[in-house]
Length: 103
Image 1: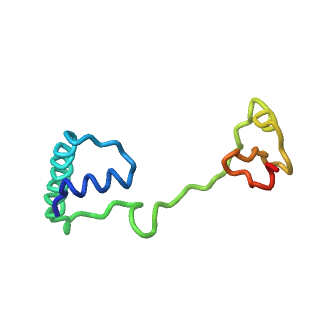
Image 2: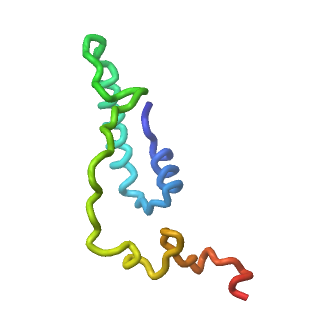
Image 3: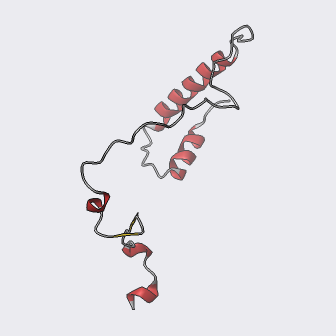
Protein backbone atom coordinates (compact mmCIF):
# COMPACT_ATOMS: atom_id res chain seq x y z
CA UNK A 1 0.00 0.00 0.00
CA UNK A 2 1.45 3.33 -1.04
CA UNK A 3 0.49 6.85 -0.08
CA UNK A 4 -0.18 9.27 -2.94
CA UNK A 5 -0.04 13.05 -3.07
CA UNK A 6 -3.83 13.01 -3.27
CA UNK A 7 -3.96 11.02 0.01
CA UNK A 8 -1.67 13.50 1.77
CA UNK A 9 -3.65 16.51 0.58
CA UNK A 10 -6.95 14.85 1.53
CA UNK A 11 -5.76 14.01 5.06
CA UNK A 12 -4.29 17.49 5.49
CA UNK A 13 -7.67 18.95 4.54
CA UNK A 14 -9.51 16.68 6.99
CA UNK A 15 -7.06 17.60 9.76
CA UNK A 16 -7.23 21.28 8.78
CA UNK A 17 -3.47 21.47 8.36
CA UNK A 18 -1.87 24.23 6.38
CA UNK A 19 0.21 22.25 3.92
CA UNK A 20 2.34 23.96 1.29
CA UNK A 21 2.66 22.40 -2.16
CA UNK A 22 6.45 21.98 -1.81
CA UNK A 23 6.02 19.95 1.42
CA UNK A 24 3.67 17.33 -0.13
CA UNK A 25 6.32 15.28 -2.01
CA UNK A 26 8.51 15.08 1.11
CA UNK A 27 5.58 13.86 3.21
CA UNK A 28 4.67 11.26 0.58
CA UNK A 29 8.26 9.96 0.65
CA UNK A 30 8.39 9.88 4.46
CA UNK A 31 5.05 8.10 4.81
CA UNK A 32 5.92 5.56 2.13
CA UNK A 33 9.24 4.94 3.89
CA UNK A 34 7.39 4.23 7.15
CA UNK A 35 4.98 1.88 5.39
CA UNK A 36 7.88 0.06 3.69
CA UNK A 37 9.52 -0.43 7.08
CA UNK A 38 6.26 -1.79 8.50
CA UNK A 39 6.11 -4.29 5.58
CA UNK A 40 9.60 -5.52 6.52
CA UNK A 41 8.58 -5.90 10.18
CA UNK A 42 5.41 -7.78 9.20
CA UNK A 43 7.55 -10.43 7.46
CA UNK A 44 9.59 -11.22 10.59
CA UNK A 45 8.87 -14.74 11.89
CA UNK A 46 7.78 -14.41 15.52
CA UNK A 47 6.27 -17.88 15.88
CA UNK A 48 9.05 -19.06 18.24
CA UNK A 49 9.00 -15.95 20.42
CA UNK A 50 7.25 -15.95 23.79
CA UNK A 51 4.42 -13.43 24.00
CA UNK A 52 5.01 -10.32 26.02
CA UNK A 53 3.42 -10.52 29.44
CA UNK A 54 0.68 -8.00 30.17
CA UNK A 55 -0.09 -7.30 26.54
CA UNK A 56 -3.14 -8.73 24.87
CA UNK A 57 -6.88 -9.03 25.28
CA UNK A 58 -6.57 -9.50 29.04
CA UNK A 59 -4.62 -6.30 29.49
CA UNK A 60 -2.11 -5.72 32.23
CA UNK A 61 -2.89 -6.67 35.78
CA UNK A 62 -3.14 -3.63 38.02
CA UNK A 63 -1.84 -3.40 41.55
CA UNK A 64 -4.19 -2.68 44.41
CA UNK A 65 -4.83 1.00 44.97
CA UNK A 66 -4.06 1.12 48.64
CA UNK A 67 -2.10 3.54 50.71
CA UNK A 68 -2.71 6.96 52.13
CA UNK A 69 -3.55 9.77 49.70
CA UNK A 70 -1.14 12.66 49.54
CA UNK A 71 -2.47 15.64 51.47
CA UNK A 72 -3.15 18.81 49.52
CA UNK A 73 -1.35 21.96 50.60
CA UNK A 74 -4.46 24.07 49.98
CA UNK A 75 -8.14 23.22 50.30
CA UNK A 76 -9.95 22.25 47.07
CA UNK A 77 -12.23 25.25 47.43
CA UNK A 78 -9.29 27.58 46.79
CA UNK A 79 -8.96 26.32 43.19
CA UNK A 80 -12.35 27.53 41.96
CA UNK A 81 -14.53 30.56 42.58
CA UNK A 82 -17.57 28.45 43.50
CA UNK A 83 -18.35 24.86 44.58
CA UNK A 84 -21.57 22.94 45.19
CA UNK A 85 -21.91 19.49 46.77
CA UNK A 86 -18.17 18.89 46.46
CA UNK A 87 -18.06 19.75 42.73
CA UNK A 88 -16.43 22.70 41.02
CA UNK A 89 -18.92 25.04 39.34
CA UNK A 90 -17.56 26.25 36.05
CA UNK A 91 -19.15 29.20 34.24
CA UNK A 92 -20.75 28.40 30.89
CA UNK A 93 -18.74 29.61 27.91
CA UNK A 94 -20.25 32.52 26.06
CA UNK A 95 -20.14 30.44 22.86
CA UNK A 96 -22.34 27.80 24.51
CA UNK A 97 -24.87 30.10 26.15
CA UNK A 98 -28.50 29.68 25.17
CA UNK A 99 -30.15 32.55 23.35
CA UNK A 100 -32.74 32.73 26.11
CA UNK A 101 -30.07 33.39 28.73
CA UNK A 102 -28.79 36.43 26.81
CA UNK A 103 -32.25 37.97 26.60
